[in-house]
Length: 80
Image (cartoon, helix red, strand yellow):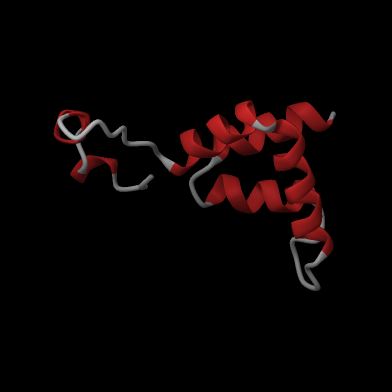
């Protein structure tokens, strides 16, 4: 997993049996594989914050800004 996809072309990794994923794609895959634990972890995460983001939506805003907009959108969709 890397946000630096330009320096890790899929052909280079394929020879080693590896795939290269962006953080957004990794989180979306994780959500597809284990939606309950992912949603529970996000709720636990924000419940422990004393400063913003103190809500799941606030955390999704932060994640979208930091490179996981698809994941943030999918979480919002599942929670509404």
